[in-house]
Amino acid sequence: MITDISVNVKDQEVDLSGEHLDGLSNNDVVFLWIYRLYSIAHFFPKNVLTTFTNLKFINLNDVQFKLIEEETFFNCSKLEDLSLSFNLIENIPAKAFSNCQGLKKLFLDNNKIESIE
Image (tube, rainbow, N blue to C red; front, top):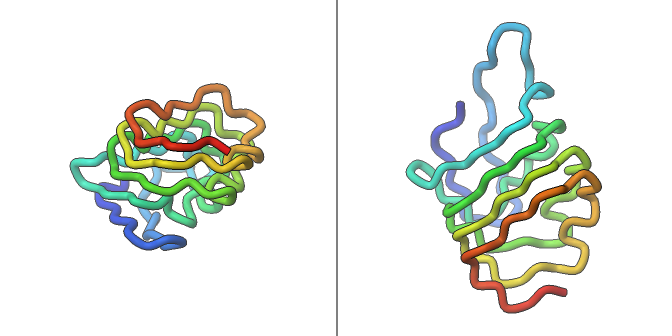
């Protein structure tokens, strides 16, 4: 479990090391939830999708997430559920989720969205 993440700079990488249950690895991680009580993530941590390549569910609700760029979710072909509610997102680029072929649910409610390209 990672309990404290602060991502205040674009393209910032975070320490994603931690212990897994016996016999499991980063490839077995399918759910990521960054919880606001401990974390502020203005930007999506650059190395999450390359570290956890089999993520199916990401919850970034209420962490002051600000920016989605075309390459933010570049390696998420297995992602099914992405929750970005209660954040500060203002713009959704045209190709923001183009590499997310498996995406079934996208939650963007309670943001400051001004444009969707």
